[in-house]
Image (cartoon, rainbow, N blue to C red; front, top):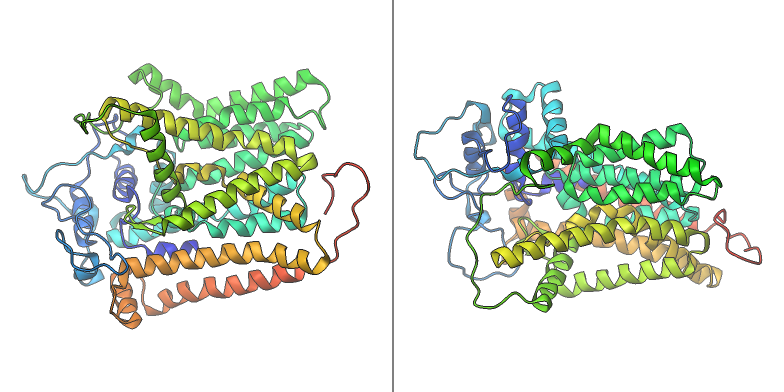
Length: 522
């Protein structure tokens, strides 16, 4: 599914993808990591986004041509993406060879140097090892997208492992792992060139190790592993600062297998010290150099005077709309949004799963509560930063639900545990149906997101699917055969997944022993 999204999404039509791409290539070409607000979009990247139909090289560096909105009629403004000529892929430029004449267009700031360089250094290293310095931009972009996919695919086993570590059954772990496919926005974002890919997989690793710290003996391997994983997470994105207390609390409260308090505190201290040595130093560096944990990568913007005083209620309403719509399906540069009712329904379903898992979790309740601190603290960081922009600048910013994807494994664990707990109270036939309907629904939601995005990007109303497929192929770096494989392979995988789950859930459920629910129940 990730590979299909990497091929399906038109070039640079994911949030800030041109800037992420620019930062990778700057490191590849030896340009270093400039201070925030001083890094610029290179001439080569400006030409690349022009060739990709994103923004003409002589215009401000913002999205100029929208995608196709399903059912859209006439519109005024820049041409639609479907109206642009993709040209011959063989004629696309090599970014490092482009140098525009002075005055070719207004300069643009690459704000990504406000982040740590972890993902960008990894991307530059991969291109260097593959000899990609002199490739065309579309080839470089596809390789970097596949790098993101190769990182984020590990969310599936990490989600299953986290669910099992906190005491969920094998069935709960299977449901949790497959439920990840239901968040098509997760696949869309993380198959693009973005530091979210490293942030999300490192956060998933941290959550898995934190779950082990809560339930297993504190070996040196676990303590050092948690510290290293947390350090890598801190080199990816600022939201992962919220994972620091999660790791510390997990070791301190891990009294099941570690009854002595003093060694637990030492384990927490050592893991945090290792994390600081690996990546935490970056944030202290920011404080020393810039007086802020994360300086703004963009130059100061003028105050947006709406004629109304800042209101907490207005802010919270805007935050709810922004976070919900951008979490479940808001593709491209957030111009292709799935119906609002679907995002709201999925949000309610997720909240019910969280409550259900905490209520029915038995031995999993305390580990779940600790791991849920990550999305809670991340949400507080999001709201705090957005509130500051609202008060100081008059606009709502940074309210993107994708920032909460760092907590996908614990949300998915709640889905699996709640579903399994509900099924255990039903007759055998109904139980099997319930256990299967949740992952099947999630796979269906993933397929719906892909179909919705395809229509929005390539298929205007009144045109045949064949013409739309031809347009997709014309823009793609791949040929007909590779594109067809990218489409067919997820379909086969979905059928196999559902078939294997049906067989797994057909197995009899062991009788529950009287008394409290045990974490070893399978």
